[in-house]
Image 1 (tube, rainbow, N blue to C red):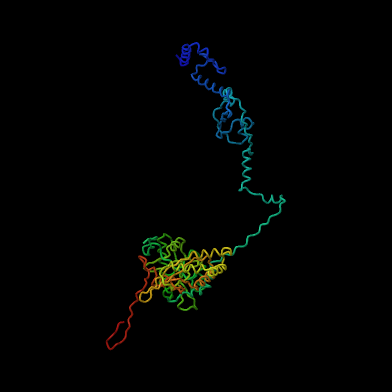
Image 2 (cartoon, rainbow, N blue to C red; image 1 turned 90 degrees about the horizontal axis):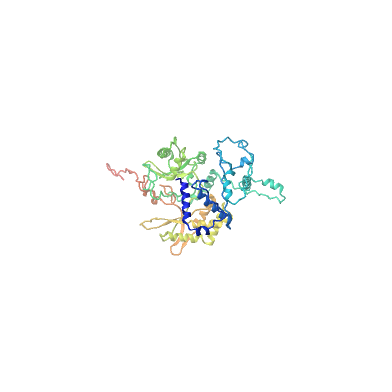
Length: 522
């Protein structure tokens, strides 16, 4: 027995088992199809098809208020570019007209109307979707035209302001040229400007007065917190007492180059000490370059050269190192202080762009509290008359007129104080206080005038006396003006290889006759 015959037999037996009243009272709807004969369609899936047909008829008889859901179009795909259906055939175009390379197509499929014929019999007829307009070779479709129009309105599209201005009758607009910017001073101009006021800046200086970032074993490692900062009297102090012809020659040397000051070097007897220090500096820089795997060859060091008319006490102290790589220069400047058993030196940039932060030194306070001294200085600077005078000095700089008041306030906010533990005879403490602030201008004459004015003021405190400014006592070891030799912080650094606070003097022998055969060794 076939599967179809089994379904028919079962249906017949089920019909006979039902009572006649049930059969007569139940009348099938008119839209249902009559049952098929046994030999008409033996397909077992015929019942499933009849159920879908009934469902479609019910939907058609009772439409939903939300509208009829239309089946989504399923375009045929052919070729490697998947053209939409009927685009080429309906409009008479072909692949040859578009000059496209031939593409192998799959087996031919029946036309679209034959595939949708059965579905159209049971569904509500709908209007076909409009076919896209023909696209000619070299032309643009409506979507592409919309895209082109949108792109033409984009801010990145080229403008035709000149054409629009010619066709527009609106009044013309004028563009005024921006004011010319001041010329940027050259390195030589800045240096000359600082040297012009160097004599004034030197007047406040009293004469004769284990966390390592590098692994070079012969040099002192960088301590925790870094090496102490070396403060200069003015931005061009590294060129003090240097012969003008030497400064001109150094300016012509191409970068990279650095300035070097040797620890505990007083500049005296340059004809003897100069060549020795030059050779030691060249060897130290070569060791640094080789450790950094830099092939610097023929490193050169230029010694200082004093002016012929200057006194012997005023000697230049700076050396120029050049003919080095940029990596070697950056490495030397990053550590700044290099101390070995042969030589100890401080490296500085060849630049005079930033004025010093140290302004002056105060004494005569009967307190060792830096907060009290800072409060006294702050009250003096924020006084109405004093702040007005500071603003007048800043008005002579390159600061805009409408920003001078704010620049004065910001300058006062950068104030900070450091204490120096001076000792008098008998161990009496006489502390001094260094006053620091960041100037908003780098013009040498304005900065010099500012510091001279602040240096001349008196700084009273209600309970601790009146502070007055004193001249700096430069350190002969590191050449900083912030402390004397006895307070130099460098000899206290762990593993320091450089000079100490007090160099032991070589014994001297004084031969004085005190009778025959007697000699006193003093």
